[in-house]
Length: 186
Image 1 (tube, rainbow, N blue to C red):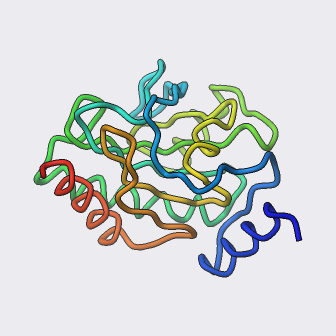
Image 2: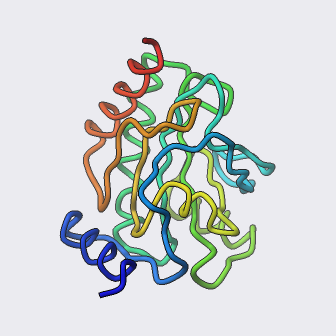
């Protein structure tokens, strides 16, 4: 059995649901990244056009890896929004805050959407935080994302302190970010 097929099968068993990738090989499971992956951000509700880096020094990022065609990814967005709202009651949340919530669309392994199509899709999903595009698959590859949705709590050095594959609750997302913040403070 090829390593890729084994990893994909394991992700389905572990997650129970979600949408699997059908593209390039993933990395060897190393979840740290010393240099930032640059992502293009979309001008959409709660998101400004431009670029961001993952990781971003001095902040924890809740990185929600999604596909626009994955129903599990779409269902997960409301929980990410709930977690963002809860985090904002105690933390500065946003591109310049100590916590940055980012949904990252995988455009590498499927047909690409135009920025205006993504903005329209984002509005339909009630997204209200940063929306970014992994145009070349670098983020998915660097962080070993083999299926969507996959959500990570990444500190400013690129270390993953919490990971979920397939979907979880808003409470678990908040706990994941808090774990990363506690580790960053030590």
